[in-house]
Image (cartoon, rainbow, N blue to C red):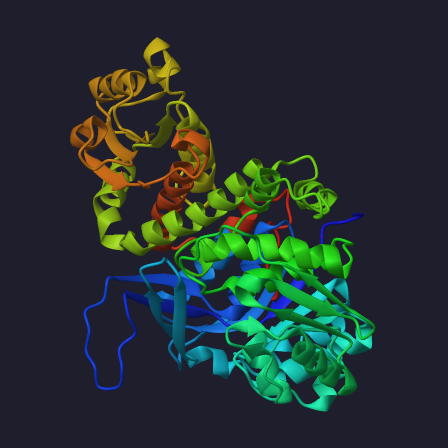
Length: 541
């Protein structure tokens, strides 16, 4: 494999509401279920996440509602490494939901019935994909499904055909595929029910695939213009036809099916990733069967989608010599280069946690909570006092930035070295000054010594910490909260998100001080003569 596969998925997001029962109810019947759970899903999002977890770079186009489900759906895709910058939050429609009724009998066999309320998925419009007209050529393959408007699929397939980009259509839910779209597809991947709906030919008899009937149905799709037909056969595996011959891959044996939801999406995502990595149809088929077998063994759509490492481990445990082992290795190399899978997952987790922690922190910021701190600074300045900023460890670097930011926006401030403060640097302080002291825990021994020395020199202290009940918070004359729940890296120890929160908190304080002072553009420019910021803009002249 020369490069990491890059896929585009234009499709759906659905929040699955899953009810498990021993027996599906009949008409008018009420029964007690076993369990209830929710899980992010949607055929488009499932396929995108599966491809990303197997090593592909994946971009997605779609819509969710501007609601909690929508935020959870996009967060799940983003956490898996999918680029969702072209997924819009639609305020006019709710996010789609899927009502999944899952029956598991005494022998452990499962079957499901799913009702999808499409919501914002059906608000996807051609304009959402217009940017692809000139950029679709960067992708190795485009994946489409039937959970968004048909005209969007047709437009994207047209763009792809012009650029020579292969297209995969998963025709689910079952619906007619017109000849114009079919002729632009490189692959079409129905299951047995969807194949029968498309061709009118039943391919299953007494629960077993009728290969002769399957062959006739596949030939009918080829006759209508399909280049390659991939058919998923449930526990019996899958088949692929290029118009000349049909290749079968059996299902993986001794896999206990817990929830078949998203098994087809797992297969499609894995198959397309393998093909774009350079695998032939047969190798891609076998690889995809292994990925899907893991998915059915777990509960929930996206929670069940395996990583590349998990597929490789299953292959190794089965010792199946018929499956090409070089494909997982090639995908692993392409996925991260010198960065291993664990490092890539840690990086993705870091991004996701940073977004969640900062969103929550920013949501809790309130100008009134900064009033006491700002008041101390205004009172000090009125009496001729000055502002200093200090911190121990990583917060010392934040202190240097904060002192610079405050000075450049109308509040002269000076950096005070945290540990040197008790070795003579307190000499820069004068009675009546204010010192901003930053400490994530608010309990550091060096910080306690520094604060005590500051207060003994007649200065007020503004504490900035992640614990409103810490020693620093209690000893401060005013306290600004800058806390997060998780730092966002391995071990959850090294300051990462807490540093971002501290910077945001001090930026908020600087904005209040600058606005209250009424800093003019002329003053700002006079203080920045050496950079591009040191010139008046047209609207400021």
